[in-house]
Image 1 (cartoon, one colour):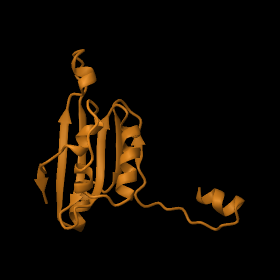
Image 2 (cartoon, helix red, strand yellow):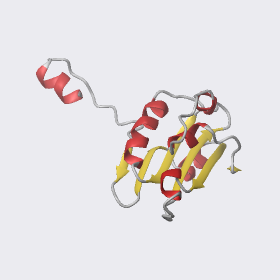
Image 3 (cartoon, rainbow, N blue to C red):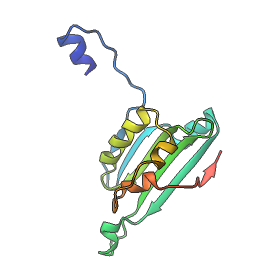
Image 4 (cartoon, rainbow, N blue to C red):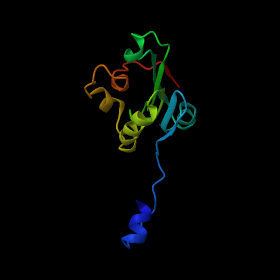
Length: 134
């Protein structure tokens, strides 16, 4: 979009490379946005919310698939600093989480969001207690 604005609309625009979501399209996929737990810990005190589970859609057919989701949250502001997801379709999920992280939403904002059940992504808004703090 920055290129289009600059070249075709004569509106010089610098690209914004802050908080760009990315995915690795392996089996399962890996999606990430923002800071990792290690990066955030170097900057400030954090809470880490994490869950690992068998998704309902594969549990009934006895597939061993697992999902891992992690939210890295600032203790001081409650802001979600990063998210990592390992799951089928993690690329799709992390794109949506990227919007929330880019917008500066807090864990409280996530918690106020009604979960769509039964989905994998509902876990992002139902993690209640940090698994560790640093």
